[in-house]
Length: 354
Image 1 (cartoon, rainbow, N blue to C red):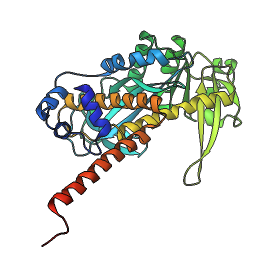
Image 2: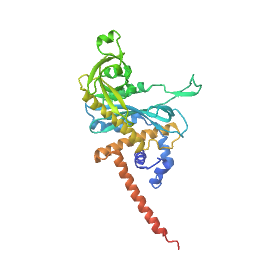
Image 3: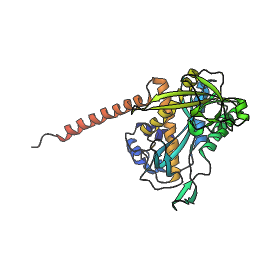
Image 4: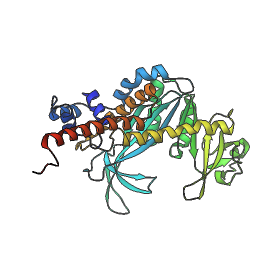
């Protein structure tokens, strides 16, 4: 059933429904059976790992990276519950209603595969003292989940060298945690971070904002962050936005032996998580399920991620990216639909009004 349902997510052009899958199978499997499958058990990160583990063992390497990032699957018209609720979307600068999910994505030169994920569950209700409105919050922060997911990756003995993440996860606690577990990191870091230029300055409490320190582009400078025991390398990138304005990206790296170009090159791999987010929304129907209850909604998310994995396996075999594979599937469907239309026209003599 999982294989059939995930194939349906990969092939369906619009909404992924039990009725649609049943019709595709000529009603050999009833839509009720498909619905019961989605509600039968709780599928999650552990089950996903068991499915992808054999492939990871074949392709993992010492130079692999694990990329962490979250995304929001918008559900504006679905009833609110502990997973479908309001979250702040930094890309839009406002709150949106939907499912917020944090993923750990394994990447090396061979493949990009989700190895763990957490759907943010806001189970605690409270009243906002400023607005008086009832709100929800999670029992665990994303940073706590981030550290738990790294621990799980270590327990699963996955081969990797670097943890890549954006500024959200570049906390002192996360930095110390990664180094204590003998791994390296490259993460975005905010310009207002308090920084000392030497160990002596750190001891004397002489800190500056990172943005006030002179760092040439394409060079790396060793600094000491407030609240962090180990020194880090900082690199600076200047980029141009679509509107012509410029921005600055600072990166913090724990490997002091790297050149700035190497830091930037490794961090570019983080872009794979953006491709992943785009693919699960466009190609595996993450946001296109009419499921109504928490279990079926959660299980649909699980199936969407597993469908991404299946697309990735096809990509490795065919050298076609996920969007090219989806287009190939759509073309086949369009040809079948066109042939069916021609047959219907012939049978019913469309154009002959006599």
